[in-house]
Amino acid sequence: MRFALKPYVLCLGLSLLFSAPLDGQSLRRTFENLFRFGDCGNDALLCLKNTSGQDAALTFSDAVEGGNNLLIGFVTDAIGRSISNIPTPATSTGSIIEFTPGGRIQTRRLSAGPIYAERAPTLGKKKLLVGVLLTAMRFQALRGVPLSNLAFNFRHVDIPGTPGFGNPVQENNILQVTMDVELQTWVSSFFVTYGVLNNLDLGIAIPVVRTSLSGRSEAQILPFGSNSVYSFGGPAADPQLTETSYQQGSAIGFGDIGIRAKLNIRQSSDLGFALRSDIRLPTGSEEELLGLGTFAVNALGVASWEFGIFTPHLNLGYRYRAFADSLQNHGLLAALGFDLLLAGGVTFAADLLSDIELDKSSISIPQNIEYTEPYTRVVPATTIPDGNDSRTDASIGVKWAIPCSESWSTFCATGANQGTGMTIITALLVPLDNGGLRTGLILSLGAQYRF
Image 1 (spheres, rainbow, N blue to C red):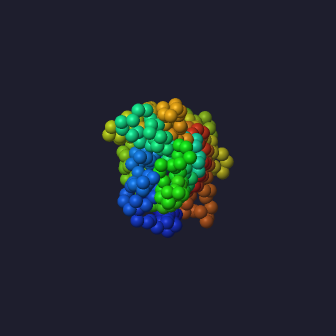
Image 2 (tube, rainbow, N blue to C red):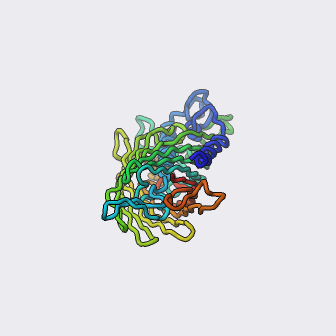
Image 3 (cartoon, helix red, strand yellow):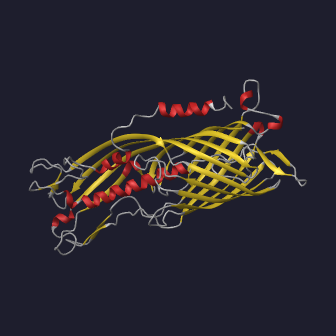
């Protein structure tokens, strides 16, 4: 065991060694600063002047703050969900414990199992599985809109005592913000699972998360007519109508720790049923974009079948998230797939994964701007479409059980201990829709050791 643990200690050390140093402000604050234009000498998001040189920030501030909260909500939710969905590979790795008709316990060789899903068999009493999975995610689009081309149109405040929106004429001014954002997350997920009983596994997954952000945003005042009532400064004859913000930062720390349990309720040579729970603790800093910041529970029923080397599985369940004032973002979870034991101890695994939102998203898209003066028209508030954030993904992966040889004798075993030893994991997750803040392809690499 002493030698087997060294790779995981090394991975943790590398994660910390290559992490960027933190600056004085949180990563959430860095993101908020993409909506901060001008220098007011205070904490205001926006600094504007009118033609008299007076502060006019309040004319757009509420709308800008709404757009800021919208993006922060999407980003925080997406990173937290993506980290919580990083797999802990199936605990039924390599072999299966079952009872014979005579009541004796026997161990039977099995494939290395799925990656993003679960199947019914458990580790077996006093068996231990430890491992690490390294996952890289680069977020690319928000509900199908590229992060390199986000746009907001912020409306002027409706001045009290005037009939219709657009009267007086300065209400027709628009503050347009375009954004180009790069957002990446790397996760080193360390996991341990222990067979408490022959049919009960308990485990923990501890993610070490590094999130980095860089972005550019440009605010532009779009006047109604030839002259603008507002500016970011400059002389009256040549007012400054644009302002640009550049931001970058990174953070590293623990994500939301997962506590997991699986109870096998029936197992035969061709069919198994189990119950699985996954509790996510709010240990990841929401302020540093490292976790959800809320308590969450996934509860699933698991069924798996065996047809020789072909072992399909089905997972169905429910996700509960502890929002104090809403049932939104609770959802149904489903995974349908198979794993196939090939020659040389290689297992191929594939899954179709769904996370279906039960309610309308709690993140509200701003309403389009409707003018009645000097004529009726509608201006879109943002390029981000309304809708829910259900997700469907496909995953493929390969697990390779290291064959025994003299040079690898520490990491593999034969005979009575068949099914123990080192397994290398590779996995690829492919998004199939545009729900929420989405990544491109997600690559995971890792290793696990079963004692």
